[in-house]
Image 1 (cartoon, rainbow, N blue to C red):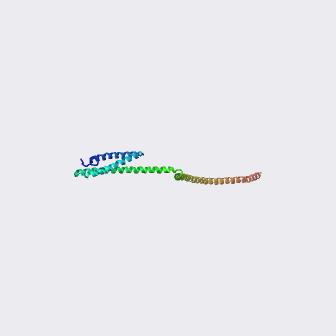
Image 2 (tube, rainbow, N blue to C red):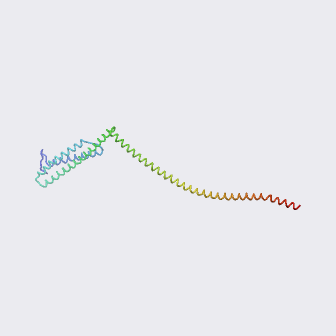
Image 3 (tube, rainbow, N blue to C red):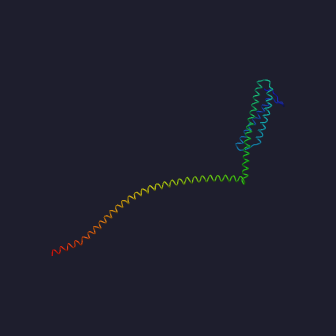
Length: 225
């Protein structure tokens, strides 16, 4: 066992035991602070208590550093040197963890204060900023709506043009058929007109021959007498 004696009658072993006990308490306090942080809670009293524990461990570690140097046996001296360094390293690690926690907590408090200030100025500059954001949001919404309307109009136009193209093809086909029918009808009418003209001519010839036949018949009758 170490023979070093600290002021007040404590041995190096006693100082080491005290330092380890306080380190366990400080480590438990850090874990509790981290749990509070994850649940959006704060415990400034616990953080202050952890800070005091780490400061006390540092003080005990300084005493241990003085005591192990007075141990005459080299092997024992080296052993307590390593133990003292381990205690000091663990204390520094816990202190770093505490500082990170406090830095995160201060940043959150600052952000909360800034949000409160913005809300407090909602009737002035804050309201103007919110109005700008609203106008930008409305503009973006209008752009999206316009884009959608253009896409719908383009789709409708394509559909209409496609329908017109189909109708144009059908109209061309109908026109070709109508021309064929008209050509056929036109030829038939010409034939009918020719037939009617021939009938009229034949009728005229028929009526023209009747007086001639009458004269011939009368002449023959006279000759017989």
